[in-house]
Length: 355
Image (cartoon, rainbow, N blue to C red):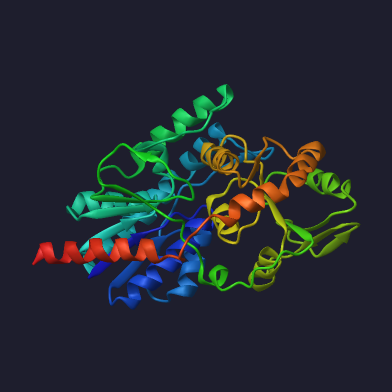
């Protein structure tokens, strides 16, 4: 079966889980082509040479560690002519050179548009649709309710009308829209194969926004050792070791940590849960999806959700590590078998219906 797969360029979570799924689809004998942008395009091009086409994607603008709505709008407006030209060029190329039987979108608009204009069935595989297609059972603070409404409307409008929505989620949620299934998070093979131990250090994964203030807070807890990724330097500052990114080394520190500290990104949180590592989550301001993930971390008893990184918050989190660890020990997930089985079943049934 010929499959066109759309992947957003912002953030690497979409790209890493796409690599897992596309590898499985290729093993099953499907012919898969991918469209993506920015860092995800580079990453996937290396993983699947000759199968990835570059488009122009949307970009987020940040101000003081917070997503700027006005800045994001202006940035994408400025890039609009280039975006339209590049995407139209690839649209015509795919139109002439690759006619997919089905399209998969990981919260990506180009492939959704391609599907609708060509009358091609498409399915959605992402974690975002939980906001629109399921009931959220978390308390939403008053100052987050406008972010929730905005995020839900964006999610609802992003890839409407899919034949099937597969929603990856580390928490249970009541589905209230049809053609929707919850599946466990997508876990990289390297994480599945990691040797898990309980060491003495705490892994800190900082994607953006904290600045050096975070380091000063960590240094106050002198009896703890912190391994920090996100500053792109190799540097030791008292009890804080900052590391440039190396996937092999990162996964080793990750698997041997006693706890982790991060924002609210879905992929990292899902991997932490899979490795059974207690989580201190302080989501980026203005990103409701991160707020939701952090809130569910606390609701499930896997860690704590704080709006900011503070010394007292960190002490409170560390005090309850044993409770979080016990809750995490009851979490069960058999790799990606559930998702693979559901996708294979759906594609097999779809293929039969086309004959």
